[in-house]
Image (cartoon, rainbow, N blue to C red; front, side, top):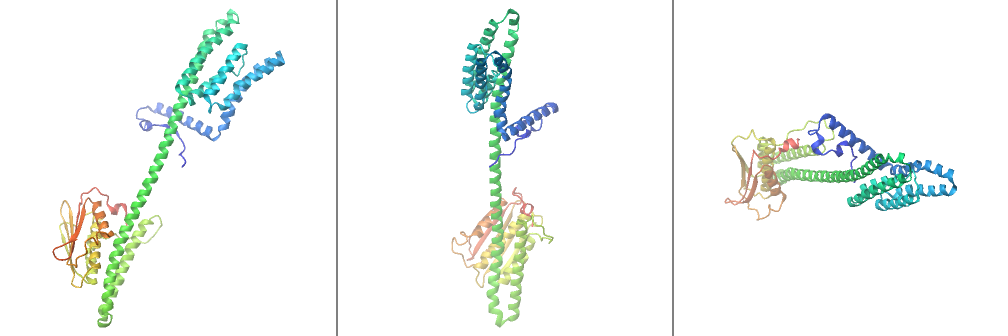
Length: 438
């Protein structure tokens, strides 16, 4: 998994994102600095060999004047100066992997040069080693390096000034001040680099975690959408097929004795099939909403469609009645769809187990606080646990739960089965019609 590219905003904490605590000029300055640092880091990451070899090469060039002077003196002096220059620059190639070892090697070399009285223009590489000691070493190691460099600087200045005239000793305080500033600056830069690296790594980890969380949310959303689609298809196909099976059984018996009623029954079967296909088409259109389609979509079923639903049930055999109480027209479309699907699923179960004399009564009552749905039939009774194990009751409970309600089902005193549902119009649950328009 790749991390997103680092930009100026990647470095900015949330408290500074909006510039709430900084003025416009300060905010722009911070953004500009962080942008430059980000670009430098990206360039360094893209071309790591440039800095790896470039720094030693620059210090090797700084030692050329000393090499030229040594060549004028003698061949041994030139060879010695060449070895000293190589000793100061070559170890820098491992300054990131072995910061402590490189710093120690340069310290030993500088002590040898101090004892021999050799002054090379490449000796400043010790500051580079100190910087990398701050970036990649422990704080205690950096502290030891700073103290040692300060002591070595004062000793070397005193040693070389002791060899010079009194007129040149007047510059000792200036040299000492510049040396202290350089040492402390390199140590501070190294420590700052360590902190920046730690902050960037934390940002990368945070970006990776955000990406993982985003993928998890996408998978959960996809799983929720699959569950919703499965529930819708179960309700649509389950009810329609139950109606078709009941009507087909009746039509087979009427085909010879009452051809006209048989033909009417077959037409009801065809109409039920077309309705189911239309609902499935609407559902699949929501799934593939990115595909253009010029055909207008009909709305999802609501309470006004309960009458047609009862007509199909009556055509399949059972005597069905519908009672509506209270103010139902102002209910949200999502809530109406949930009530419709609960009634549809309960009637589907009635059709599956209906006897020739089965009757079913559906009551939908609304008050300011809740919507009560009751579906009662006269049986025969279901075997305890039969519907409990199916998806029908689970789907009804899921729909009621979306609106802070619940569903209960079981045998009744009339010898049949009763389903009771409670839904809350004022629930904070999302409206299905708004989230999944047909």
